[in-house]
Length: 209
Image 1 (cartoon, rainbow, N blue to C red):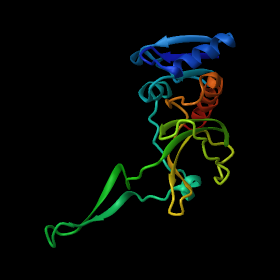
Image 2: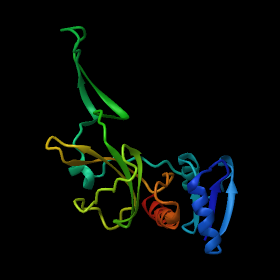
Image 3: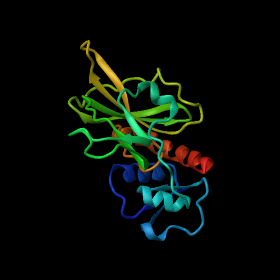
Image 4: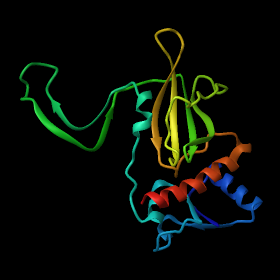
């Protein structure tokens, strides 16, 4: 197995990968974003870098799926896409209402959360989580037991918590992401969990092309 790290890519993600490689006697190669191999990488060549870098390695563009069907029970805000009807709201008849399509664009209702967490999922199971934004850095991530995550699914699920109308803690899915080019927000000591998530995520990505 070999890790191909984008040479412009820095931070705790790259450090976690290098540390894992040293401990497990695995090869690491640094590549500029414009110098990826002309062939698709195989399942044992793990790219680590930006979205553009990883997609160059895949030789394809990955279409986002921010809200897979299984997370929709935890999405309370409005999400609009596709064919929509538009009409003015500042005055009557300013223009005639019309139908248009939001192509490759999604519109989401604004929302705020008290704390935001990232859950790392491998083959339908949570393998790590990390807090990344909010008012309480020591807050614990909500569990995902209410979601029926498919056994084969790999990726991240970002979760926001908020104070609901009863004064309790509400939970909402912020978005999901394919298992690449995602920041590591877990503990530094748990970096191996992130790298193993990357490795399994790459195999998953190779399987869904």
